[in-house]
Amino acid sequence: MGPRLPLLVAALASCLLPARTCVLCDTKVVEALNNLEMDYLPGHLGAEHHKNLMKRVKQALQDFKELPFDEDSYLGVVDEPTLEKASWSLLKDLKRITDSEVKGELFVKELFWMLHLQKDTFARYAAHFQKEDFCPNECGMMLQTLIWCSNCKKQVHACRKSLDCGERKVKVHEMEDMILDCELNWHHASQGLTDYSFYRVWRNKSETLVSKGKEPTLTKIMVDPLDAGTYRCQLDTVQSSPATVIRFHVTVLPKRIEEEIPSSNIPSQDEVAPSEVTWGVTKSSTTLQSPQPENILRGRLVGLLIWISVVLIAGIATAIFCYRSEKVMDSIKSWLGTGSEAAQSSQVPEEKDTESRSQ
Image (cartoon, rainbow, N blue to C red):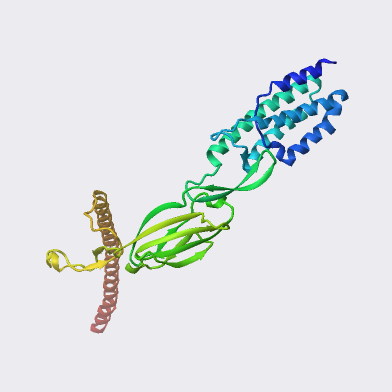
């Protein structure tokens, strides 16, 4: 290997694509590089190459900072989840190399090829963050914690957009519960949020505070027509500017119509006119509808089953009755037969007694 190794290291390092990364802001990456230098290199690479190799590795990681600034791909900042994903990917590949116990020139090739691929991986993570997770609020002001790759410092960035997050129309029936929800999907990721405040807005533009607290919803039980009108929700922050403002236009509809269904004791149509029929009451918001074919068929099947059951029960009862009647007749006949024999036997002694007297 000899003097070829420094030339190989320099050549491979120069082939690395320019990119920018924050992985050196993760202490786990710094610790892994120290372990590589102190524990792995002594048994897998000549001592005369250790210093030069580590210098090239750290320079390659520093070269991650050469990504061009682009609004859609990279602005020099990432959030903590993005940094964790990029660091985990780098550490996983580095561990794969050290676990393989590869040595010498082959080790150098695999190491710098891995760094080359990791730059591309970080570029993808950074672009995804920039498009999907950087200031995700479509309205309002989000306070997002970001990591600046240039100095590894965490700072809160104010994502300022239109504070007006629109208007919502809410319809609720009288005597039912009204729920106004002021929470947006990015609120849980924002920093520095304080309280949700709900105000009743009157026609003269004045406002009355209805509720204030950590809950993003306003609930009013059993509303009446006086509850109709405009409400305004405001999510406050530790700064002077609110995070979110939403208006709700509430309409209170009449109480739901209760559907009327026939009661169980309604006389037949032959007995009274339709206008004289009384109806039971059940809660529903729909009107009466004509019976469905499935319901008609189901009713006929139920009626048929009931009729068959009645006939079957009647047949069984008749059979039992006939069987018992036959036994009763046999008993009567048996009793009558026994009585006749007794009468005949008692008559014979009497005749004999009469004959003896006459003699």
